[in-house]
Every structure is written in C-alpha cells, then in structure tokens.
Image (cartoon, rainbow, N blue to C red; front, side):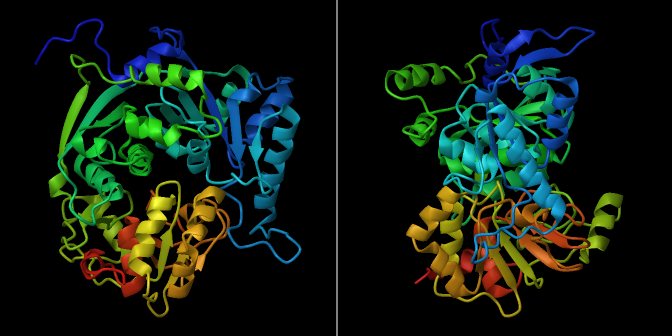
Length: 476
C-alpha cells in the first residue's frame, strides 16, 4: 500500500479541517463551525426555551432553516383549511416552532410555504445543502445531506441549543471508513437494497465512531436521489455520518436551485467543490469492499436494520444469537423460512429515505393499471410540496389512487408515527423508511424495510414479494 503523504487527505478530513475553530486536545473535544442548522418542530422547543432562560439570542439566524414535518398531519385540511392534529401536543409543537422562528428571524417553511417538506428532502431541493458544508439537525438521518459531499450529522436537543447560541459545536474527531461499491446493479435492485445489504454485511455497529465515504463505480452511476438514500441510513450501521464526493451529477442537481450560488459565484463554488475528493494517496481508518452485482432486492426480517435477507432468502437461525431469537419471536417469523408470501397488512411509501420523485415514479411503475390487494392499506406520502406537485403533474397521484392507495400530504408520516399515521398492534408493515424497531410504526406493530419497488409489489400482491415479476411483465 502506498505511503500517505502529509498532504493526502480524505474527503471527510478536508471538510473537517476547513471548519475547525479549535483543535481537539487530550482534555477537550474540537470546536467545529457549523454552516447550516436545520430545524423542525420536535427537537427545538427545549433548545429555544434554554436560550430564553439564559437571555441568549440565535447567533446566526441566516444559517438556520426550519420546517414542520414530524407532527404534521398528512391528511388533507378540512373545507375551512384547518389541519387536524392527532394530539394537542403535536399542535403545540408546530405552533411553538412557528413562534420561535418568528421571534428569532429564522426562515420557516410552514403550512403556507410551497416548499414545505421533510427537512432532509426540502433542504437539498432548495439548494441549501451544498458540498463542503457542515450541517446539523436534531434528527438522526441528517446524514442524508452527506450525499452532496457535506459533513452532516444528527445532534441532541442540548446540542441544538449550543449551535443556536454559538453556531459552533463540540465534537471529537471521528474515524474514517471507506466503503467501495463496484459493479452494475441488477434490474430491480436500488440504492435502498444496496444500503440494506451493506448494513446486513457490516452489522449495526460496523460503522461505529466513523464517518463513511461511499465510493466506486456503483456510487458514481447513482443519481442524487439514490445517493441520498445511501447516506440517509449510515446511522443505522452506527456511523456518525455518510459522504459521497461531489461530481457533475451533484453540480447538475444543484444548478439553478433557489439557495444555490448564482452567476460568477456559481463558477467559483463549483471550482472549489471539485477539490472535495479523497486524494489518491489518502487512506481510510478501515475499508470495506462491496460487490454490487451480488446484491438482490432485500428486506429486513427482524427488529433492527442489520437483520437483512434477500426477498427469497431463508431467515438465519437464532439458536446462537439471542437478539435474532428475540426479534423472530416479536415478528412472528421462524428461522429457515423465507419471507416471500408472508401476508402484509400495510404498505408505507415515504420518509426521508424514499419519498422523492424518483421513488414515487418507481412505485407507480409497479402499481399502474393494477389494484392494491384486498384488505391491505397502502399510504403514499410525498417528501415535500415540490415532490407532490411534480408527482401530480406526472399523474402519479391518479395511478396510486386508482390502484386503491391513499395519496397523502407531505410529511414524515408513518416513518415514526408521531402524527397519527400508525399501524394497529400485530399488523405487518412493509415500509420504505429507515428503522424497523419494535413498535416504531405503532404499538406492537411489525416492520419490514424495503425499497419502493419492493413495497409497491407487496401492495399489489398482498404478500412480501419482489418486484421482479412486474418488471418483467411491464406496467402496461
């Protein structure tokens, strides 16, 4: 292996170094400057309350961007335009963030905004997410923004207050993990299958303490929506963040967006962004190689995202693994069985992982001219108002509605179920979201994570199914 020179750096190290206010020492973590602070209604009330208690203001409101997404109903407003919240607490969360943002001069995309959406969908759409940035949010899946070559990660409520007050954050420097993915994906295999396969391979603690950089021919061939899906679930293998080096795909996506640089500033920015790549002589703290040609449509069978099998693959034995045994007992599955043909009660297509236009197009391609299985409930929830408008312009809403699915308003919805979109106890949900923990989508509910293609196929068959049969038959 070639020796790394002092000037050779990984993508992560370049972004980290640019934002260091103070180096880490044996006694204290580093101080890192934050370029963009994303806010939503659930993890901000306590932080703003602490600022008020201490008599502090928001240091850089221009570096903040807020939305309402977690507690917001996805059912349409009534005839008088009123939104019906599942609880008064949900309503209070929304109204509180509205008051706090107005007080501190923070841009909030609320009910009246044509850009409102899930924070990790809306931010990139606006061009707020840019290569080389440090981005934080009181949300685990902030790693989504790493798809643009940003260092983006979730923070706790106390840290939200720190960033609001100082625009800086105390951080210990993570390790680096390079995940090289090579080869062409088979038809019907998506970025969701890739990340599920990775988590199943390295485990839910395989990335602990590290920032992952995804690279290789498979990643270069992905569009930005797919790269966002890939980075989104980095936290599910324990990683601090996930990153992809920016390239022409990135620049094409960002060009012309409302908050992207314009004119000469754009040319200057792109010239700088092109330097944000791992140097040829740089090495990672650890390295994993993934053969993309071996990946098949994948689903989870247990109660964390690392319990993964191909749709037609047998569930492994839990005889020597207590966590697998407990998960199988909760899910009602048996070691050695395949999930294919397991009856499904609910299908959810949405979340910050898979609610973008390309995700909805993929699902619609399976559901077009077909019907949702009798007795199955299917929810399709666009990730933002922009996605909703584009999907409706494409006629995707009619495809879903004609198939018997519910076409909802944008929001986090059933991913976490804070807004009332939940499954009943015991129901089996096939979900395009990112976590399958016990009761995540409703008390005693059971969750199988899958891609939009697989989820759509399950909605039509009423069983855990691969989309392959529909892809081969065509949608017309």
